[in-house]
Image (cartoon, rainbow, N blue to C red):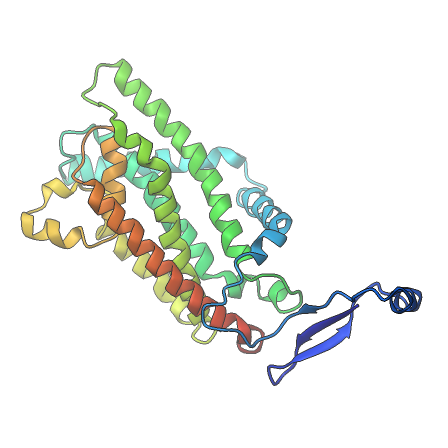
Length: 311
């Protein structure tokens, strides 16, 4: 049962499959059975992303998900409670600095709930993007020794952060219930039904941007230092700490060009009843995500061919 692997010149080379003894080879020849051949070659088309192959590695994906989720707060005092403590601390800081000291408008929404909802969605996007962008560098020892579909690790990072997002959404639900019980002006709307699509689109943008940066950093390591600064700067171009309605019409048009803006406004419109967004804008953001993801998969698939030689 030979297995074909790629040669230095890009061709396919057949090597004996592990665990196949001489007796098994003789039995295969005697019975006339077709030997199973697996071809791993560097020669692929531009759009050959091999996405169906991810299903074969689904068990490995879940192992990486478990590793990432458990190792984040390993040997810490609070452990998984940090998934709740972090957004609470950040929201208190936002409320104090941007709400009370800077006096930024929240469009009539309760400040704590306004900043909490924005922080949760932004953190999911930013964390996924940052972790995925460092996939090749952080996992170089594994990826250079063992073959598996290179998208396994980015997908596992997306899922592990999705678990964290789910915990934080439970926290958000509790806060909403508290405001409703106290007679606040918060009024959840049918836009809450769009929450799965909002999360899916945000995750798609994080995956696409992350794998593009990941592919480029195999040759240019200094890009990793720029990513942290660019992510922080991009947060201020996204309505995380301010509503779109607080801007002038001119700047509203500019800020709506950010594909994350409709997602942030859709979440707040569903959670609180405050937001400036249309269904068409969310659909356009989703279409842009699909195009951006296709570009990212193409760039990533081309880079992974020579990853082991350039990392």
